[in-house]
Amino acid sequence: MSAPTRRTTAVIPCALCAGQDITVLAVRDRHAQPLENVLCHTCGLVWVDPRPSNDSLERFYSAQYRQQYKKSFQPKPKHLYRETLRACARVSDFLPYYHAGMRVLDIGAGAGFFSYVLHAQGIASDGIEPNEHYAEFARWQLGLASIRTGFLLDVTERDHYDLITINHVFEHLPEPRAALAHMHLLLRAGGRILMEVPNIEAVYHAPGKIFHLGHLYWYNPATLTALAAQCGFTLLKLATPGSTQHIRVVLLKSVTPPDAAEVAQITVGNARKVLAIRHAHTALAHFLSARPYLRLAKKIVQYAREYTYVRRFSNARELCNAVLKQWPPGEGYPGA
Ligand SMILES: [Zn+2]
Image (cartoon, rainbow, N blue to C red; front, side, top):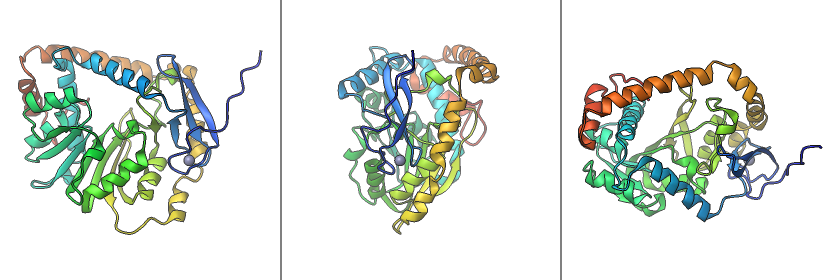
């Protein structure tokens, strides 16, 4: 029996180029549930199409919430440890972009670990977090009164911030163009965005373990740069460090409107490139490579370290402070 023919037209037009000619990359998520991710033939952007219902998105986020938090709204100690280390790593990587007295907004502040690490460096930051339990934890357990419950569009201080940080949030947003436009309004002239998103080019996960409901868009360096340029941002720095190849960018609020022809050039040949990477990343190729076994070994070491480390502390702040003391940003850390 021949395989069913997959559709070639998107339900939602591409958020970058408005194209609807697509290749279906996957029809299931990492839990083998139906979820279609498609790739735009014109620019190479990848997105969930059609969009899941709000009900299924809510179920997804509440399940994630249950995984990390107990009924007392207390993150598990291993998550405290892991997230504080990650926050130290992120602050370290962008250390030259921070200075005392600047106004920082952290979008998707979560339980506040990133803001906590910034505060420890003498940099005050506002935060916005849609999950009220995460935001409450940041306020009550970490003492971060400046973390509000809400969404990006609820922040209305125009021309106010010197820096916006948005780590592993942008890919969850259903309207990325509107989000960037809003960040543009919130930043002062010369303001910057420090952003990190997963990379659709990454071959870190097994092919069947990539897609899930939360990531509505998947970027690679070209599509992220082009979208930012369309929304009035100049790329200052881009890196895809380590085995995860997450995309880290520094974007500068631009005062001149983007040149459409120049922006279009950024994604020439990109769709073919992304498709080739995804097609080459087969289960056979993945499991014949050293990657999954190195990843497993790294995880075993990480879990053992977490287990022994977190047992020494009785509360969140004590644990965060100990991590900060041992691996302060800029001084090296064991990786997270
Ligand atoms: Zn496109």
